[in-house]
Length: 51
Image 1 (tube, one colour):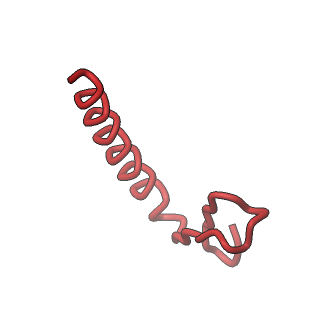
Image 2 (cartoon, rainbow, N blue to C red):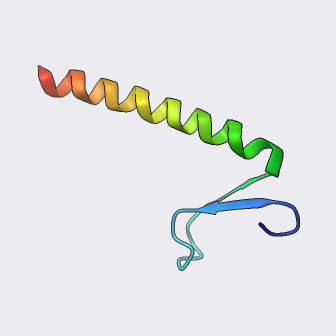
């Protein structure tokens, strides 16, 4: 956390990678949404792989 902002980065050693910035109060809902998106993606991949 920097200056009251939570930063999430894919690769902290690569400064060209995008950084997501959230207020601490928004982190939980952002991560929940990411989990929902990932669940939906996995469901679709599993359905596709089964065909």
